[in-house]
Image (cartoon, rainbow, N blue to C red; front, side, top):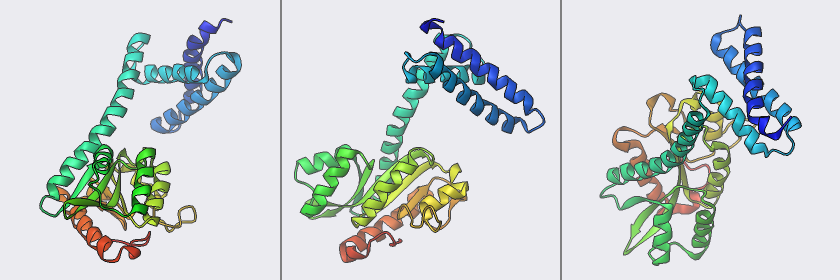
Length: 278
């Protein structure tokens, strides 16, 4: 058995396990059978391939199984085409996430025009700090620089104060609620603990139909006793509940909340803890 064969082994074994499991579940619904079969095929193949090819990097084996999955789902057989599809998918994930951040910034700033409030990207805030145009206190500045170094937030909310700006909010953006939401929750809680308005925007809120994700945002469950954000803004009306908000036409809901939070931050910032609500 040569090392070179690991790729073919992963493809063949994945399909073998998938077909066997799906056949055994043929009396179940098609979608349910497919989900169960592909999950088992991935699990069995990765375990066996790790044992058979200990000198192959684990990520290479994982990629070979991913290629087998893409081939089955798409019907594409040519490996070069499969690799091109995978590369395009990875490129989309990276570029689309950054593009969504910039789209949210543009939409928000258009809606916030004339309020003295604006949304800035990480790089915008870094530039403003470098040019001494941010007016926050020293403790805030230290905290903000730590967030920039860790890339915990995609955007920040600022309010005009004389010739400078003051940061009062932190924003996370997600194209999908499932995308990084678990690890994004903790930085958001830290932001609220530091008395900043902490919010998130999500493009696809379909996972908010599941209790787990509702509780991650709103709290009130054994696993998530506290809310994870001050507000979670979705581009759809159907998921609104408690701290999950429809952004509103022309981002009206978000703008109203941004104005309330800015006013509260300057007037009684000490009250803007995790329990504060717009």
